[in-house]
Image 1 (cartoon, rainbow, N blue to C red):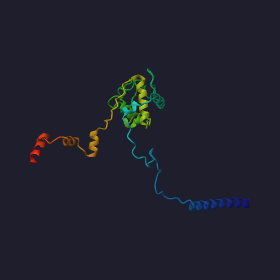
Image 2 (image 1 turned 30 degrees about the vertical axis):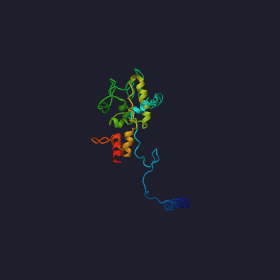
Image 3 (image 1 turned 180 degrees about the horizontal axis):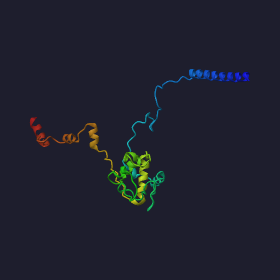
Length: 223
């Protein structure tokens, strides 16, 4: 019996010694240290590391002018878990959003809107919906809505166009036309003043005019 216990104890000690030896050896091989640069590099869409400043989105009017209602309906599926958008549709986790565009914040009677959203002044304009869909938590800090938002500006415009077509049907905002390049702008770019060009083409004010015939007669007398 003693020999058996001694054998077991010997194997246990051998196993412990082997584990300790492997631990020391692996520590020597795989030496850990503080990384020179913490974190992981993240490339932005244009390939720049760190995801520099995103390019400013077009105005909502310009995006709505080229919005695709069908694509907006497909994107609205992300909202359908909480919202209905049918005439007379029931409220869910979120309110029914039929004919919402142009209505005041918190316009559905009886729905328990958050105080954060009810405190936002104004109506659900196209601009307001664009900001809300980009980030509900930034638009109304403290809102109960947990949706992270739609980062793609054109996708937001598509969704807004679809929502507008569901009972609101408000006229889309006009797109401001860019001023065409003019000759004056070109002259400014080259440092030329159009007034100076006009003055060069005309005699200075008060300068005597010269009669070609009188000049010819004077030349003959001088001879």
